[in-house]
Image (cartoon, rainbow, N blue to C red; front, side, top):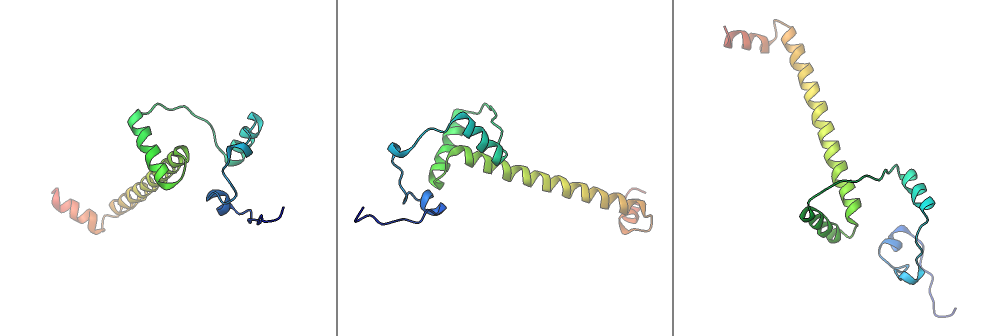
Length: 118
């Protein structure tokens, strides 16, 4: 094969298409392979009903970023879940701090509340 150059098989070269994107060289993954991949990545298929306009918007955003809309949705939901857990933990910590402060009758918070509601 003269005239052909070898391209390094890196993730970046797969993603940017340097290693090719011709459908003639693709094969459909078997159900067994799909299940093995889902298992390896810790994925579980789900069904969810969403407005068509939301799906179209997510697909447009995903296309803009050069990814599929399902990975984008996973990313969005992951970010939301992490932020909510963080907010919940902060709320719990703040509640504990407040309860601790209120259990100490000499604390400024208790004195303030006693004065305010006396």
